[in-house]
Length: 322
Length: 318
Ligand SMILES: Nc1ncnc2c1ncn2[C@@H]1O[C@H](COP(=O)(O)OP(=O)(O)OP(=O)(O)O)[C@@H](O)[C@H]1O
Ligand SMILES: [Mg+2]
Image (cartoon, rainbow over all chains, first blue to last red; front, top):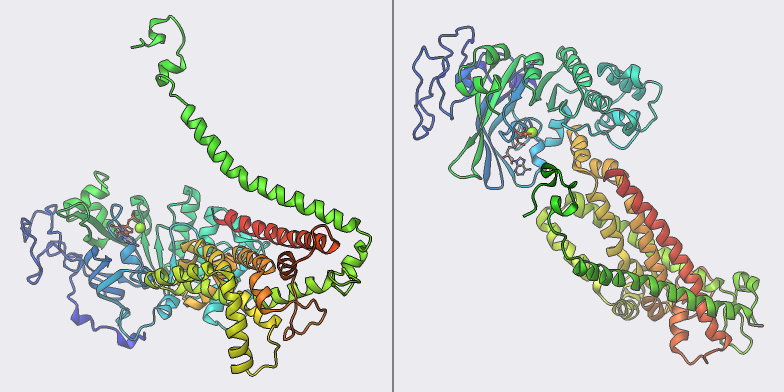
């Protein structure tokens, strides 16, 4: 996973999003058309719906330092497809938010970024995910290796039933990291702005902490291994507003050193913390079971919230549905 | 139709005006009583066992040939000799040695099986292995006993391993009792490991832990009290196991610590003497109950320890 394996930028089409007249959704010639859908959108109608199959790179592509590039990423559980054809680029050292109604596949997609879906029997991934240009699902890639570089924080705080210290030391020990463990633990706790809260009770069981502290402990635990990316799946949904605010502040600080992808149900949170936002939708298929998640629109957060190109994005961010 | 009484102002609401006519509850009560009787059976039987054991045990200690201190400390157990000795130590020792060997076999096998089923096996493999394990648990212990005596001792211990063991020996008995209790240890331990929340596993995998590291460093410690409960329950079964030791370990109460020799356990003594021609009411007959009482205490304590551990792990995650 070295940087010299980066995909040449020329292989991917660049569209500047400052060029708003050309950032109209356009239909790729090779895309399968959906019966009944208008294939192309005439210019000058910013809120006209794009075809469901529109790709993110059609809509917004102006990222020249991607940490992840997905192309036609589709995930199915068993035989039922859950998310189809997600193509997007996640920028480095920025915060990318995934929003969308429940069941649209946000978690499913974020779990492709550290191959967490490998743990679900029956989960099947198609398409590609590149991490610094390397195919994450390549045959020579060890998923355990991947997760050492790409940390994850979950919806519910999940500290181990161990001491605060041992929670943080877990990752570094597993990775066989060299150096003073005390120092590693202190630094991780400081980065998660938790050090002052817990420095006098490092040997206490982590279950004795408040929910917000537990979640920051989980962030510190992930940071202790010096990951390059932090994936956060609804990290604040179990927390009160004050704890949420602290984690958002923390994300702003962490952005200096790590790339962050966050799934959130809280639109204000996406607007507050993220640089870019991807909006997913559940596409009700012909039958009840055929609920398929798709990426509708992806772009700079302020544009997604102030000037969405897709009517469904606009309805969602303005709270009309979802 | 009852008119709403508040509106009419005649009387306050009654249960019937709010909830409708009361249902007939006789059927409910009959079922509750039947179920209570079913549950009470085991309590009654347990009490019955304790009472009968206690009575005969007291009679045993009242016997002139017996002293409590001799019972606890003497190194000879010869209740059927013309000059009987009632030192229970050889029997307790035999029980502990054979149970110890059984645990040495069953702990790694049982926990290993549990870890495999809970952490490694695909759903398909799990579906195949679990019934096999239950099948093993269902094999009558007398079959295990003859397996130990007619195959394991001659073919494996003496033949394959070339060991100098007696035809009846504690080692074969202990190992086979160990195999016998693997399903017990494995199934309780597997329950405990499966009860470890998936979120903990994901947390560890998310940090780059391998499957082995997740199993050893997260799942096993988190499930430790349940795993311990399984081991203690297995130990209690090993202590109580009769057929295998009766058939394969011999009936020689000895203070020798060498498991290659024949030895007798508490259960084997009870089994052998009980079916033999010991006259009812004799001291030897009463000794059966005294040994039974001691055995009952041992397994009771083990089961209580096990229940405590099970409670502990249930509390943590539920
Ligand atoms: N382990 C699984 N097994 C089978 N189907 C799954 C599994 N996980 C998710 N799905 C299905 O995949 C689809 C997408 O689920 P996912 O959890 O990714 O949605 P989400 O956008 O994260 O939703 P939420 O906002 O509720 O967390 C859903 O239809 C869901 O039922
Ligand atoms: Mg989710």
